[in-house]
Image (cartoon, rainbow, N blue to C red; front, side, top):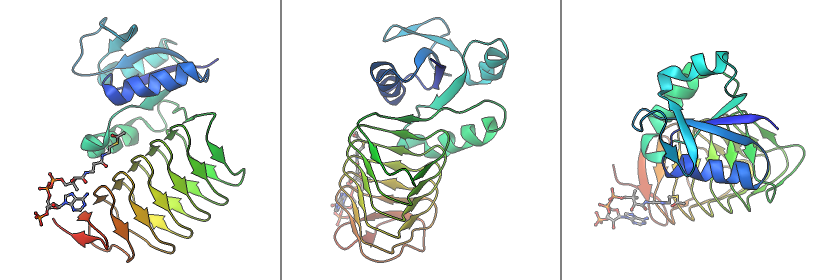
Length: 210
Ligand SMILES: CC(=O)SCCNC(=O)CCNC(=O)[C@H](O)C(C)(C)COP(=O)(O)OP(=O)(O)OC[C@H]1O[C@@H](n2cnc3c(N)ncnc32)[C@H](O)[C@@H]1OP(=O)(O)O
């Protein structure tokens, strides 16, 4: 079993550790976190050091692969860390065993998919994105890198979500919709038109708020 280290020992990092262990996909050996002291135990898992110490730990054979457990409030940071470590440290992938993913779906490195998601044929989920519980992604839809999909997001077919998109709980996107990078949808938003300007959108139909 591969040894996993997780960046971020907060709630999201702890959830990833929980699924990695209980779903028997990885042995979680520790967290890297700039705000929790080295040696501290978080849910019985040690903090191995700060983010700047990841490369040295990898070279010392402390872990095999890494995942990022940083939430949607720090999405820029999450994407920057990924870009910095890509090609230097191998990224893992965590697709919970309860996920139904068609064999034609492409799921990139660094992606985390929580229980109960449905990923249809010819879907592409780009690197470092996270799908929370019960997300449905219909056929031929693409999710841009570093995005965060909250519980029960539903995307119809032939959509293309940009990078660093944050889709709020239960948001719904009809077929053939595209969004640019850095779009956020509030909970329950219904998207029926393409989004061409980054920012925060809410409501049904979605309206720009800032
Ligand atoms: C497992 C997990 O927990 S994953 C995380 C899941 N969490 C989510 O999905 C959170 C989604 N967040 C939201 O929906 C938030 O309301 C946000 C981010 C859209 C906006 O939050 P804030 O910046 O605090 O905005 P604020 O509450 O001031 O609202 C601004 C306006 O948008 C409206 N609004 C805010 N959220 C929504 C919404 N989801 N749907 C419709 N209208 C909304 C408000 O009524 C307000 O309208 P007004 O100016 O006409 O009075």
